[in-house]
Image (cartoon, rainbow, N blue to C red):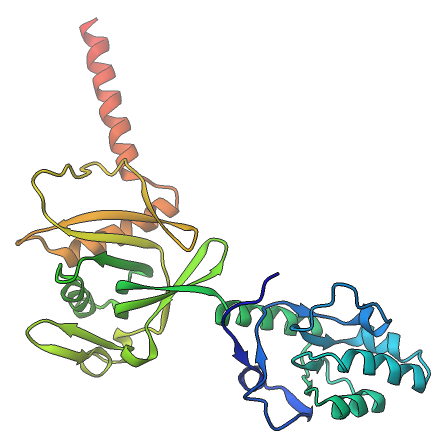
Length: 316
């Protein structure tokens, strides 16, 4: 698997997973983890290094420890030297395992961070991969607004001045939450999941033309903001154009592709007198219904078709 163009510092992983440094150099902030893959170096401790990825964090559990315990001290020293002489970002001992003296010796010789946790090997690998998937995820930035409405992440897109921020502030007043205004950082955290957030610099702020920049968190409280949210629906806002034909039944299932993930989408025309906040609330609830298997447009169409079939049968 190719490494990510992004990275996570080893120091941040140590803090996140409460890892105990047994032997660590002073430059933990400079050591970067660039892949979400984790390796258990059983084969490497046996001397097999074909296809070995040096960029992976190495985790040693009970199995690897029991295997190396059969070695003589000299053979153990050689095994750990072959592993530690490669520029691996860190070696972590799970389940509170006491390190072999030869392991500590080689970690100090080659300045490899040797860490320990009380957690089980399986749990540590699962949790660390999940964390790294988010931190190292493929990402893009889109001009738009991301809000949470009835538990649905709604990404509002449209030209500047179409009313995205005004709609977002109305939704916040109605009890929903703001994630990002103006710039939305979108991460692909799995094959089918996109998560959006705001850049640190503008987090919790929103720009309203005629008023300026306001801090949503301070004005409406902590309950009005949220750091991240899954993107469930994309709504494109555009000025009303009488020449365009807009979907009135909702049978046309459109989607927007972001980072190779298809997200359901709608196009909502904007003109004076339309309450966009209410429309988006209904769109959010309708999207939840569709995910649960209920499609009002299809049911309505089936009822209309059944009615006309009955009328046609009566005339015959």
